[in-house]
Length: 104
Image (cartoon, rainbow, N blue to C red; front, side):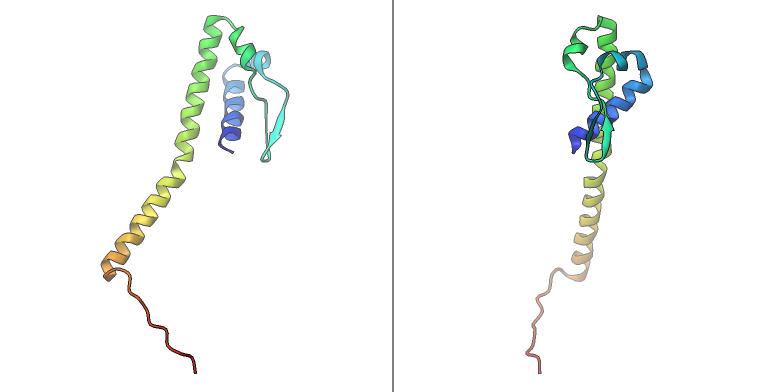
């Protein structure tokens, strides 16, 4: 799923930054996990001029960083929640075992 998000955002970012480059190196549209995107052809990227290749690689780098930053939000929220739970139980005196009696 992470790779699909990365490809979809890369497709969008390259299309916004340089539609001509996008048209030159994009493969046909694919659909995964409900996302439609055009992955980039690595072989076509290698045939670009040095300036265009540097531009594409910069967009790829920025997109990878942005995807990881956005995905890192969920574990960060989970950390804060579990820290809060830990502090809550520490304040109460920790976990207490309960004795269950027989039902009558």
